[in-house]
Image (cartoon, rainbow, N blue to C red; front, side):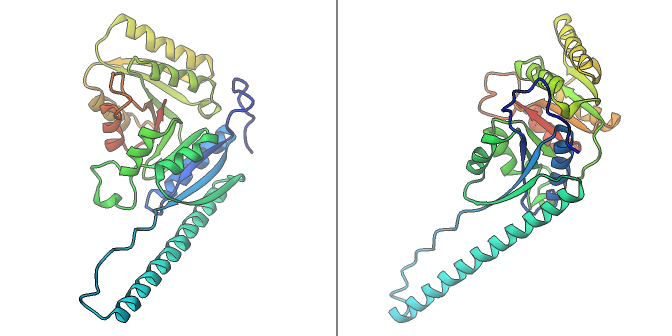
Length: 296
């Protein structure tokens, strides 16, 4: 049963999330993470699979090589092959969405829909997220086993372009109880904590607010204030300030302490945050085995 909407939310707040499925080994995990989120936050799930635009037919001058009639027949055959391939891709997309709907139903999601789109992924996400609370996407796509040290190109594009929180699903889902909140002292991190405090998605979870860097009194007050805000909202919260480089320390914390989810800003606390993923963010996505929720 879905939980009631949060009393702090606007009555017209979006009541769905968008889950992007591509048929890769991450697709089942995307569905599991979407189901967990939907059940806790009382959201519907819209599954989206995006077909690439048809490739433009190759333009070759064959008139000097074969007779005109033969050339026309060849072009007609190539056109039929293109049409057949488009039909097969569409059937494959429908099958991917049907499988994803079955996973959501198994996970207890009763309000789910599916859309098969064609075109540019980022444009499709921009259209879908206009009425969505969150985007869920896998860390890597169909070439996951061949590019384990790299982020999926679609993930990078979506993470940079989306104006909604993006949940990056890990390869396998596990129940989420302990959350690491990576706080860099910036406005995005502060907004993330405030959102967590009023979002039923995080109700009752254990949250560790961690800053990695110099032990400045102002920073300690900031993260302790963030932990206090989460505790007042009913989370089991604590604050911790650790020395070192954020990429190395945060990754080690996730692995050694068994955090189930990392919450962090999509961009670092810098002047170029509007152009690139923050370096800490990108490295955490590459190396961390836990799902990561990128906040705006």
